Length: 88
Image 1 (cartoon, rainbow, N blue to C red):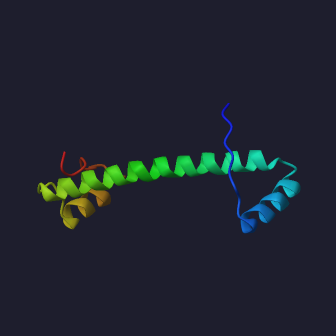
Image 2: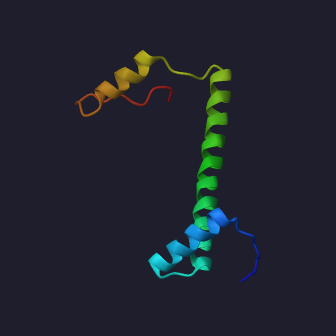
């Protein structure tokens, strides 16, 4: 396990100490949890950004659907004659 030193600003240090006492956890534990959650959120954001770029390229290449196509498909859900997803 690596060791990293950080300097916390007083406005972060005080609430961190209070939270650690309240949760009966170490500051180290809370900091590790916060960093883990941040990294997970960034990973989700990276995926969303990639999907956004893919969607924009799809539109740029003319691969889009009309509102009517999508609504017809959605309205067919649960019926005896459910449509295949549009564009496939």
